[in-house]
Length: 162
Image (cartoon, rainbow, N blue to C red):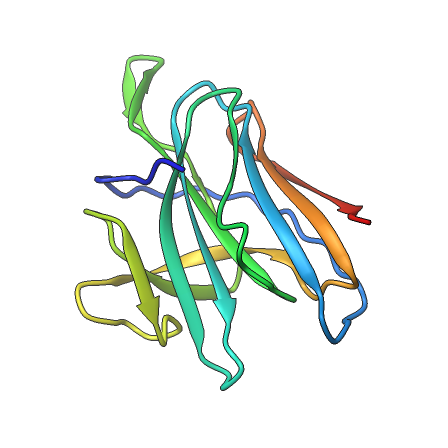
């Protein structure tokens, strides 16, 4: 897994969400894929047993690439945020951002991060909007979140793992 070492900020968003019934011992393998023609960096946030949240980033994805965020995670719920590298389009320097949900979590723009109590501003962080990936997960599943080539949308697919 390659992680991001820098990034700048702009706006924009897309949301992909899936809701399933909860299970006591769910395990989800979370894979992120990018069909976007420029590099995308991914952060995730997920709840802890005490009601607080952890946010982590950045997973680096090149166009056409897929990678698991962390195969050791056993999550029932998660949120995600994607940010592209700055690129030129129509004579302008722009950057795409996926993560326009109503939940905000701590991120760090300049380096990899792992924040506890991420639902609040922590240390050197700033708060940024995340999209809902999955509400709750039933059984053992493989989840794939794809950043689409249009730079606006994501798709989420869930497949049972036996």
